Amino acid sequence: ISPFGFVAALFIGLAHSVLFGYGAVYAAAKQLSTFEISMFMVIVITFGAIFQWPIGYMSDRIDRRVLLIAVTFIASILSILIIIFSYFSLYVFFIILAFYGGMSLPMVSLAVAHINDYLQPDEIVAASSSFNILVGLGAIFGPIAVSLFMNFVGTDGFFIYLFIIHIFLGLFGIYRMSQRTKPSDIESKYTPL
Image (cartoon, rainbow, N blue to C red):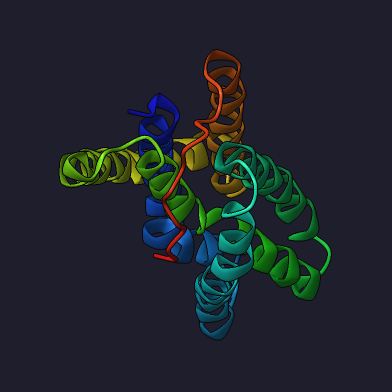
């Protein structure tokens, strides 16, 4: 069993529930038009789907933990850049948002594939159930937590919250890599979800 994969499930729930459940609220609070709000959501979802393939290709060739940590840290950096550029250029904001979606959304598939690397075939159903419960728990608390951040910090609290979630997940991943080496008999394949 992979502690990193299961902690990732919780943190992914905390992040993705905010993107999908509170993203439009954030965009409206930034005073985007109705069309721009819809573009905000379309960009996140579309580029999250597009990036599944190159990230999946890489994850079948290098240690998935390294890749999951990398996309997590890249997403955290992009969160800060989104905050900065949201004040200067809507176009640059949307471009950075596209890359953020491309780094953030494939985390689910990476975490599932990473967990499957440590499982026997008869353990997959139970592990998948536990994974989904943890994502669900994160999804319950994510929108509540981000609303508190936004009340305390302002609109930018949305991406500050996501920055913190990604940073903590990446740091936990580094810690876990120091505790266990990659198994040599990995047979699982990445599947875009």
